Length: 269
Length: 290
Image (cartoon, rainbow over all chains, first blue to last red; front, side):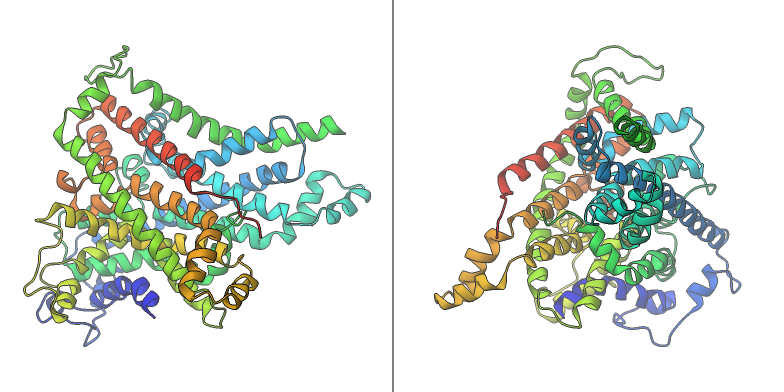
């Protein structure tokens, strides 16, 4: 019970405040639940009703679209690259295998700051600032090691006999990967994809330096810029926050099983 | 056949090598070199300057303070995340039909953007409308409303870190729970036969066998708190009183445009993260056999 209160209370409080008018939210004594239910914050932000919010609804909508494109793009690219790499590590023998694997996994210990300034310069010189591609490439380089680790552990858990049967039928390694391993690995792929998507959606520091306008600013950057000067009423801010967490929250609840297995991949060795 | 497979392996790894090589290893090398070469000026000066960038950074009081702040973030964050991680994992240990939905709710804070989480917590700490003051007043711990993120620096640091702890703890719970489930129940039965109390069971069976899980949880909590950025950036902006080294790195580089010092701070963060993680792995990790 305590665990649930601890985990959910801040979310409940934000949701509750987002369902109050700014007058009700900023009045004493403190309201512990919204009464009556006030949906206008969402109505205004989603442009369903007239509001004097200037470009705010547009900014929020565009940034949510940007977050979605960047997160989906990162997830597809990361999982695609990770499947081939993880297969090579799990099933093929080649020189320097151990060193390449260890180096890849060790980059998990590098903080964002190790690459922050050089990546900013690289993206500037490649004209990738303010583009989806710039964010997607940066994200992918950061999240590949974990996706590979998850899939590598998953592939290793599959019995080799299944592929050997395919090899006897004359299949080549890539055919065995596509026809035997991938269909069996959907839970592992779901784990890698879900974790990568959530990481992408949460990104803040890199988008903060790699985006300057709504062509590619994700929701995290727009929300931070709105909240910074404290000009918007908090109940409206809370509604914007709720819209920004709706997608990852739904994903986390739906794919929970895969996220748990992804985050604990190899942790029990 | 064999060399064919080797060639296939290298082809399959080529995209990975490109990403890790060009966008991770090369930039890390650039950071390492530039910290000693880049000079602060409007023209792109490129001379060997030795430790000058480090010296300049450390002679700025706000940056020195950010190192102390980060130390507090790491200490409070690691202790709280790991203790809560162990406690919650023990609570969630019992298999029941509630465990899967409970786990889904517990993981939620980990899955959401820290920027929005900090925004939500800022309201909890709000001096006038925040529930923290309300709750503390109603149980009699304080008599009048406190300004939580303002006056007392140490208090502000721990409260900012608490927002991160809220986000990191689910990961610690999962890692420790995974280790917990490997401990065979026969060990506890044997302990009970020998008359061991629940506390003894925890102290002499659970805790030692949890070491691998606790180690990974500690590394996760340390790397998160050492590199903390979103929470102080949102909660206190560029106020230096609670800025982390991460926030200062950002400010120095992108507000003062002093990339030399930015590289120096980045390198310190990188080395500190790697060194402390490896140290924890060495000191805390023990291979356990069942």
